[in-house]
Length: 73
View (cartoon, rainbow, N blue to C red):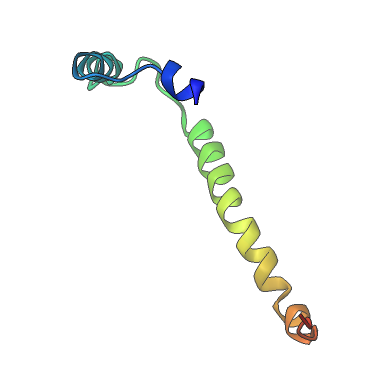
């Protein structure tokens, strides 16, 4: 009960101040440092592997999952 009372209340002025501070960190300019094609390739490869590895694992083991008998409750 005491933790609810001590929690800071987010009032309208605090909310607008927080939004403005977060908005200031968003840039619409070009990047300060350009990345090369090698770095782009590595980044895309890691991203694709992160997404596709679990799906590939599941698809590879589908026959094994089908052979299992359903668990009894």
